[in-house]
Amino acid sequence: MLFFIAQFLCCSTLSDAYKILVFSPAISRSHMISNGRIADELAIAGHDVILFEPDFLNISHAVNPVKFARRWQLSGFSSVFSDIIQGISGAAFKEVSSYEGQKGLLEYERAFNELCEDLINRDNVMEQLRAEHFDAYFGEQINLCGNGLAHALGIKSHFWVSSCPVGDHMAWVLGMPQPSSYIPSLVGIDTTNKMSYLERLQNIYSTFLYVYFVEKSVEETTEVFRRKYGADFPNVGEIAADSDMIFVSTDEFIEFPRPTLPNVVHIGGLGFREKLGNDVLNEPYLSEMEKGEKGVVYFSLGTLVNTTSLPEFAMTAVVETVKQTPDYHFIVAVDKYDQFTRNLSKEVLNIYVCTWAPQPAILKHPRLRAFITHGGYNSVMEASRAAVPLIAIPFLFDQTRNSRAVELNGWGIPLSRRLLRDDPGKLTSALHELLSNDKYKKAAMRISTLIKTKPFNASERLIKFTEFVLSNGGMKELLVEGRKIPFMKYHNLDIFVPLGVGFVFVCWVSFRLFTMFLARITFQKMKVQ
Image 1 (cartoon, rainbow, N blue to C red):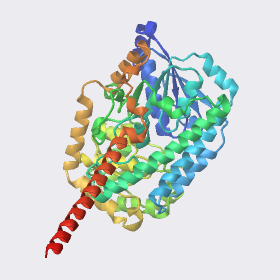
Image 2: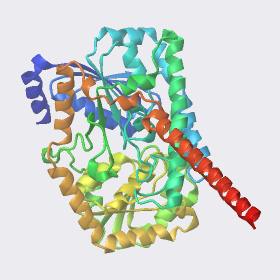
Image 3: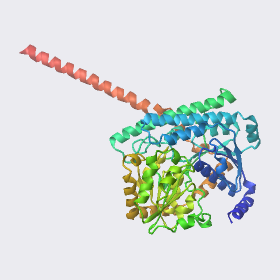
Image 4: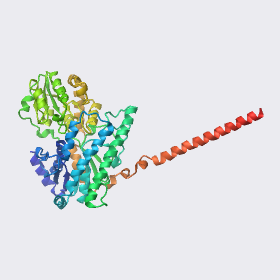
């Protein structure tokens, strides 16, 4: 049925069709799926869309993210990116400072830049892309290689996509207000928007580090393009800042409320269509969902966290929690090479261990009672729409922040991954609290209702704003001047600092004059006496 809907829409809007490039490097399954949803929605609306997929992680063969857009896969890249990802999973429980942790982001970005340089040096590929004469470019904020690519291809209309909540550096580039007093840094801090004095101090530090290291990466990305196209190639950060529209793949109801910009549009939940019945469970999952006296609990840490690379105590804590919760059946998704968890679960009757599970369909099943997740935004989004309370054990990037946003609205419990080592019983107690206290389910149902009934769904926002921008030749009227203003001027420090110094100087002069006057009076009194 969806195919015929797409065909009808394509035919009905063909005269207004635009040619669109969606840049989607294969860096994780979740990012591929998210970008694929954007490409498909645009294709369903009648546009000629190419999902361009350089396979940086050698996983393109395992995922088919589009049904309607054209897909262009590109292989033959080095393993530098997969080496970085493996290192991240293996170091998940290593104690590192905020500085070292955020410095690790720079290594991630440098691996991306290395593959980006490989990509743009494939002249035949660049010529093929240039020959398409694209009207618009869509690309994520993970790395600004795509923004530079779009400029090199001569694409005029740029749509910058945030795959997660708008981060510190993205806000910095766009000139978006980022009050560190109540907006937690995207990475490097575990807090909500209600911070203590010390947390605010730490948040300022985390925000500074994040912006510093990502800005350093932006400079290196710019150099990649300048080596290819000459010294006059613009800074890729400036290219990104001039994007006509910013699409944020999050929902306002699963985020900390914050000031924003007129050209920022949220499209969280894109591609979810409850009424089309696409998420149908097949065997063996259909039978597994019928087990458990009180229902089912689903466990998955996503695609970036490799359970094979985790220390044994991590999955031991999970299996022990299963044993301590006999009234519920557990579906546990692990890495295909994770033999340790499979061996550990052999004698446990209420567990089903699998390599892959149809997560959206499982989350929508009426017998599901809870979801233990890593806090990746796709998983959080799917759980919110299905009204499933969750326990979030964050590992990477924005997952800690996502977990805290869920906690803020009362439909989940965040749990530090280090507790799996230091106090594994905390996972059991947190799950029992989630299952026994109906306040979490009620809060999850409220969030689900708000998301599903708010005016203008994600698809409408994406399509209408995209076509609005393209039909009007850009949207420069909505670009704020703050994206070009230096730090001192943006915060009026060039005014406040001189005023402060002047005030201190006046106070000092006044004090000196007063002491001199007082000394003179005292001297005269002594002289009279």
